[in-house]
Length: 223
Length: 255
Picture 1 (cartoon, rainbow over the protein chains, first blue to last red):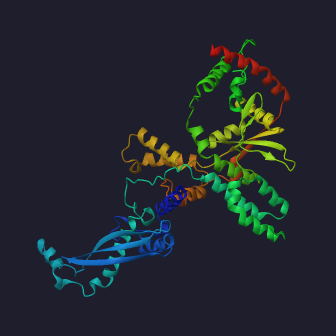
Picture 2: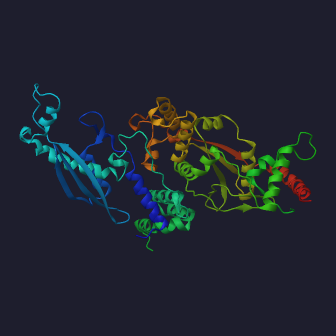
């Protein structure tokens, strides 16, 4: 990766995308209604969109601790600008569901009831294990940026502040190129094309040469 | 200082008439002192406020919006023009098919809708009038157009305003305070006029306003107005008369 100023601009722009607010349609309350979460479908689709499908999970590991299953995995993405592989670890846990504690059990016996495997619901991990992996993935994705729901439950939130990169051709140049491309596309005769050509700076012309030649050809003028 | 050239943007102050009709006005003398320091010591007085900062920060956006709306094939001018009296770099030049400059548009970015409407209702300032006259004189254009444009403020300026608000309210956790939220939303409404564009420019923006409930955009057509100044040969003659007086005064400062 060559960290040329123009590459830095592209990196910063991608970082801005990672730090965009999450899609409000994907934000739901957690089952206990105490917090908000970005649902797994939106996390996975956003990974697909931002990393062009180049992501995977690795090393899904779990362990049973009392009445919980704790797990972790590694989310691996390929950065679309730098091409480097980035890894983020995600961790989560789920409770092994047990039958309801009988009403005549009190105090610490209630805890013992929950910890006794004999009381485990028959299909306790059937759905919970899949959910555990999803929660690990969500947790790993959080560290990539706000778009994955990083700040959903935080009050004191920092914001991504990109640097002003001096030396890059900059926003004015980008706007000029975009405007000229639109003008070329809309040009209906060679005179209009000539006007555009005359008004443009060499820097802009250098970037729209192909479009101008294509348009010229469409007017029956060969190079 | 016999050959000092005066910048187009300084002419408004320099052309201020003296109350007694004899000699130079105090405003002119003060402006000339600045010119003197610039010429002799190559030091430029730093004048900065949030209005100027926004103008500089959004210059490209303002030009882009104006040219698209007015369908002008025009790009920011970098060429400095000069004659024996004045010097200046107009923002834009409208050139006709015969390579003649027909208009000198100068883009003025308003701070907010209030200053924008204020400019719309009032005549252009003396500073702009003389700036326009100088640009027309330098380029041969018969008209100069002052284009007032209202575009989104950069996110850094919005965050800066909100930060200052949080300090004024003495809040350590501003986002938990309803008064802050309300006032911050008001700041955002005063600084954002096209939310879609804003979110394209700053996808990571952390706004207090709810995007889904945002209904405060102002159409582009309502965010541009123009004031045209026509070339006035008498005004230029008056300016030419005064330049030797200014240069003479500069020489007295040099003593």
